[in-house]
Length: 77
Image (cartoon, rainbow, N blue to C red; front, top):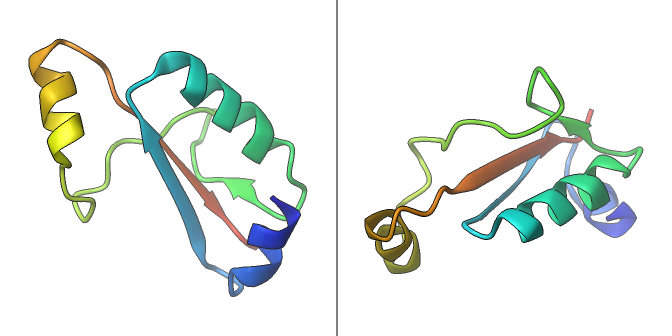
């Protein structure tokens, strides 16, 4: 994560999304532990799906099956 933080330009946003809750929790813990990135969520958890992110066929399938999707956004200060 330190490498990702260094490669992002200041103000750049690293976005992640998954429909696996365990993976979402793991991503939140790993990325949240990076001192070079700040969570965009006001409560340091997940963010709403940005309108700019297209729905993938996997996400559409997950929605049909009733899966939730977790989005994360971390900004380099």
